[in-house]
Image (tube, rainbow, N blue to C red; front, side, top):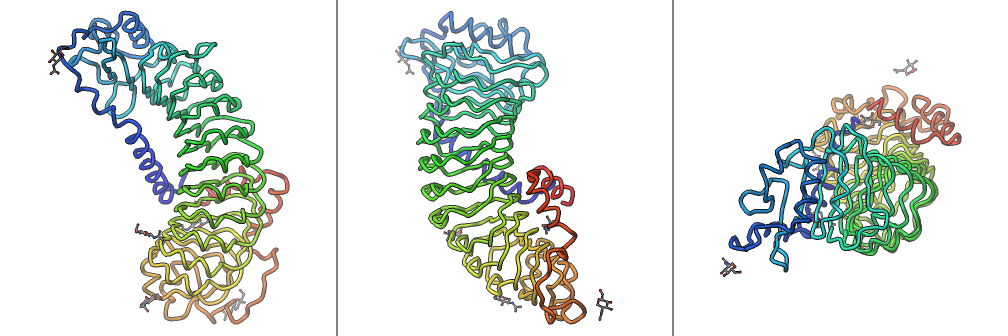
Length: 468
Ligand SMILES: *[C@@H]1O[C@H](CO)[C@@H](O)[C@H](O)[C@H]1NC(C)=O
Ligand SMILES: *[C@@H]1O[C@H](CO)[C@@H](O)[C@H](O)[C@H]1NC(C)=O
Ligand SMILES: *[C@@H]1O[C@H](CO)[C@@H](O)[C@H](O)[C@H]1NC(C)=O
Ligand SMILES: *[C@@H]1O[C@H](CO)[C@@H](O)[C@H](O)[C@H]1NC(C)=O
Ligand SMILES: *[C@@H]1O[C@H](CO)[C@@H](O)[C@H](O)[C@H]1NC(C)=O
């Protein structure tokens, strides 16, 4: 994908949000090494030790593991991907297994999912990153569930050979706070049972092949702070019960096949900082209470067949830093209220059917450094002065608005942003509404045709990315 700059910003945000979560939840992890060296039980429980050996045989490329680490939890000799903690029974217990992240050991090519991890009653965190890459394997949980699990974080990420469904028995991991199953090849529906994991703080099922609807039971996850279901093939409407996730800060449902309007209940998500709904088939009105989302900093909703006037309510979300509403058939004027968004750094409104003049007040957006209004039906004189034009440089794009023109004095900058000098030709002095058939490069024709046929997401994606 070529949308490098804004995407990376988004990533930075996601990563930092994730770090905050991990820190707050797993602060105790740091204290791991501080146990009493003279603890008699440098020895593990024999059953637990055997279980750990089996897991290592399934995963690690270190064939001599049993020999090199006969007492794997022993302080000082412990394996880098393993953490142990003393229990009340005076034994050391495996509390964390970490393969493939950062400096931790990698997995062997024939690694398969070790369901024995569910037999380690003291295990709190599991990370398998880029681990199951060659040998196809599924997430297998004992058929009757796991009875005494301490697992708080299960993170299986970037495993291209991890296939099959998300097993409903995962819901027996009652202590789970963070479930990350991102960038695998998981298939099938999201099991409803997952929504009984009411301790969940972070649920990330992004970049898989999940289908079906988002169950209404989603509303049960009252402690959820982050929800990411992006890059799947989820269909149907966004459930109304989403409004019950009162602590939610990050919501990403991008790149699915979601239909209908954004539910009105979303106005209750007062803590929401990041919302991404791009590349779906959402349409219709925005919730009336959109302006209740006081904390929203990122609203990213490109590529949806909205076909409504651009809502002025966005101008009330004063913390917005990034507002992206490209390729979505928005019509009408750019609301002057947008000039109140003093922290806005990115405004993307390209490939819509916006009309009228660019509000002079946008010049006051002192933090903006990326403004794309290209391929609309804007007219009149570009209101930006030379210091504004210099500040944005190549991050300002006004091209593809045939009735827009620049004052002669700004003409030099005008050439770079795709606007010609007023009076030279086709200028503001001949303001007439364009007929749709005259819209730039036939885009809207394609736009309308495919939205009717329901090819929206796919075609538009191709169109956008092939141009970028
Ligand atoms: C470690 O535990 C033993 C007995 O359980 C105790 O006598 C000793 O003082 C402890 N050492 C430290 C450094 O806490
Ligand atoms: C704008 O950003 C600054 C710096 O990050 C912050 O202090 C300020 O509160 C923000 N303004 C609003 C309205 O959120
Ligand atoms: C350009 O416009 C901004 C905002 O209205 C103003 O602060 C600035 O002084 C202007 N710069 C020039 C060179 O006119
Ligand atoms: C503005 O959007 C158009 C259409 O998507 C894209 O081709 C162009 O590169 C963008 N311009 C900037 C400066 O981001
Ligand atoms: C304006 O454009 C039209 C067609 O694009 C062209 O025929 C005409 O010569 C142009 N006029 C000027 C003054 O450039």
